[in-house]
Amino acid sequence: MSKLENLIEAVNRSQEVFYVLHSKLEETLPIHSHDKHQLCYIEGGVAFLNTPDKSYFLPARHFLWIPAGIAHNIISRSSARMVYNFYFPASLFPEDHHVREREGIYPVTNLLMEMIYYTADWQGEVGPDQRSAYEFLMALKNIVLDVANIPLPIALPTTRNEDLRKVLKYIHHHINQPISLEQVAREFGYSSRTLSRLFHKNIDSSFLQYVKLARIIHSMEQLLQTNLSISDIAYNAGYNSLSAFSYTFQQIVHKSPAEFRKQNA
Image (cartoon, rainbow, N blue to C red; front, side, top):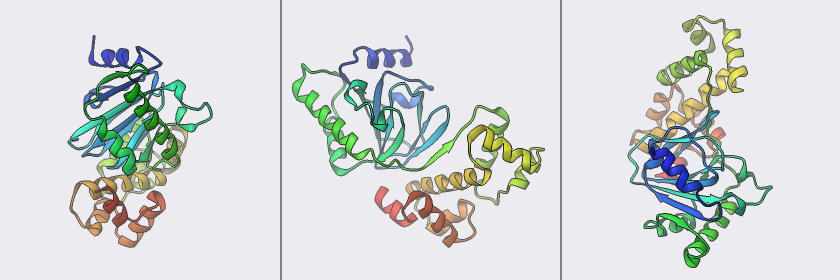
């Protein structure tokens, strides 16, 4: 059996137990799904959660939440020290709670971080017969329900449309340069109107909104992974004005660039 088949079989074997896997294995797997909800915390790195529709940026001190049945994979952009994975029985979560249906990125509180670290040596299934560990994970589940209220609003839409995928790739490769709808349309032989429609039809986003999010995600990575000044990071993300960058960052992330760097360092 492949690594992916082994993982899915182990996670799905019993629907009534937790499964714990503290390993970088998930980072090596293609898009897949399983029958349990998953919490993933990456220590010492930044990463992306990819689904068929979106790509979510995961900064430090945040966790990934992946509901049961959601196709996904995780790609790390830096060398993680440890990847903590908890798989929760779906039946333990209220039918009307949004975590049953919606993936997202949520902040890790100090309490949640300490509980994650407490399980550093745990691996495999944890059922009711392991009373102490099982009750601990039940408490962890309740904390997740408490903190998973407002996800970090940083998600780039993706598409299976090959023509548009080439355009998105171009945007990311030129993110530090001026990018306009007219210029990119000319580059790919479209009219501005045709390219605009291509965005709305395939990813439910305007061209300008996509570029704005791509610039902010690029800047978030640099804020966490480099010692560059905020002015330099703004320039590298394609902004000519620090004030315009700071305003847009605050609008999307709900923190200033300096606050984001300090809280997630």
